[in-house]
Image (cartoon, rainbow, N blue to C red; front, side, top):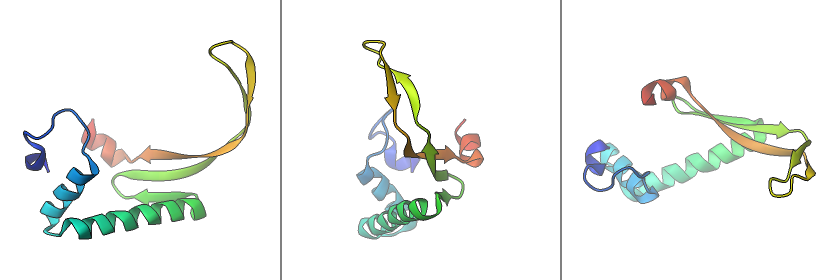
Length: 103
């Protein structure tokens, strides 16, 4: 992947097109095949997180659905106290292997 990006873009994140091309080159697949695989992975992640509350991608991390209770907050412009309603949020927990590889 490094060779693919070398000299093309610096200090910015990969675009979806660049990601698809890099994976396709590495695996010897077409961009269309890689795109379909990525779409299926994303669909599975959404469905499994919604149903089971989490979805793990080994070595990368996991999506986790979590309930956040209602709480009081402050309007930063006026300082007025406001009530923030309860809601469900999705968080991404980075795997230890990913942290070790990056940091």
